Length: 262
Image 1: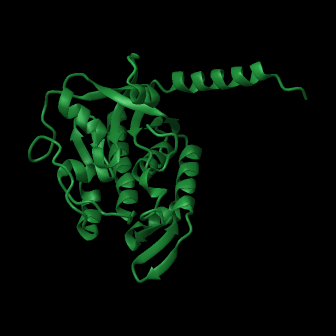
Image 2: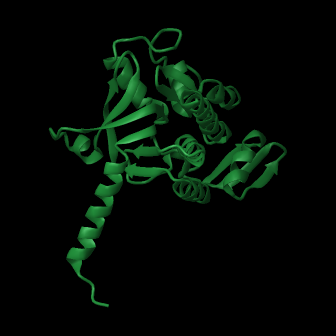
Image 3: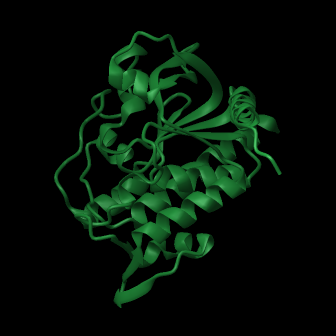
């Protein structure tokens, strides 16, 4: 077989534009490709939802890749093992209640299973803005991350969706945009992003799941973005809460979509 470089280039351009065009109108937009965003996308896609995940970096996986301080192992407490079992991630007991898994394998398996479930992933995408109609988020305004990094004036494109999940971690980037531009209060005590507190794993792990909820009509927070939004602690390299938060937000949105289609 003789390879034609133009055919190779045309294949990439055609296939990419095909999936970009097909995912301009979706059920759920997940922003942030860390563990919470991946798990949420997996469960939503498995339920038959049309899901796109947007990640500003080249790689997917968020803070899970580096484990703790670049030691590429993570800890998951016993409550989170059901998610590792669902995905087929291998782990070992360290002592009762504490389990370790390789961070590289964990990300690789989460990512592969999420793609295979049907989630379409767009890396190198930044969220510039949100669309709000009748006091409800109904879409994202997207651009290339390199455009943002270079400070270029390039107009964005728009993705319409029924729900948005902010899984962007400590910065809660989507909720920050809503706070600054929507002109309405968030569903927190102060009506604003309250900011994360210092590290306290025991408190933070439970709070991550408890804070996984709707923060503004049409917009949900999951993972560390949930704790940052509601003014709770960070947890460090223990990931059970992140995984369970992704499952929880998918469960809530699936129930909403079922009711709306009934």
